[in-house]
Figure 1: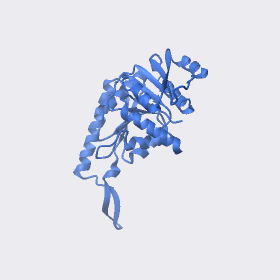
Figure 2: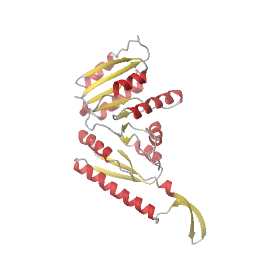
Figure 3: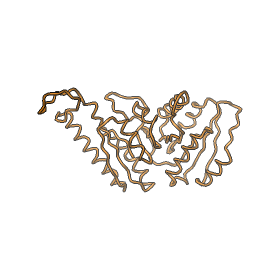
Figure 4: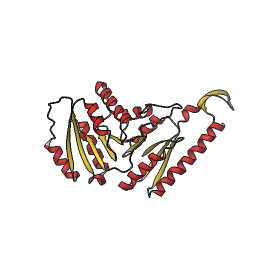
Length: 276
């Protein structure tokens, strides 16, 4: 499922989603979020039993009609891109609050693909956007975040492994969703804040990797975790990064959010995030 701002279509994201759908032989659903709520205002209504005040969008205004026309054109562009790439498309349109609708649809999706700068604000938003941060806190399926600039073809997979169940869960989810990538170069990347710390790959993980991937490497990085990770990732192209949960609660959630937020802002590669 590709999450889209219905009014501002990002065709680069559509093409990337199409390439993944073609790779896996999957259909692609475009979730067009319209956010009609932002156009709602107090309106006086006349009815047979009197006059009353309600809050709703003026569906006869020139602004509303122009927006609907733009959405129709974007849906046509989405369908055209899918057909040109040999992908079976389907479309869902939703007028209500974007985050609420995404969370509801995520219960029934295998994977959601979304832009790092996806926003419904009129002004420029941050990266990751406010919408994306709220989405990642509670989404019920794995999410693949697409940066502003990226390479469409995936030649390398990087697993960010920190010894937690969450990071292993993300690795499994990615592997089960994309078995077609088993022949790509795979790097299991582990970092330690202590210079002399020895990082061990569990024998069970090695056996699991051997069952799913042709070739894999285990890389150790020592130093300030986020800094050395950014230094390692920055020059890499045609890769996808897999990390564990964005966080569920308390201090742990806040630390993981800031960690993922920096990665989303600083590196130009798709980021696969899975909640446990």
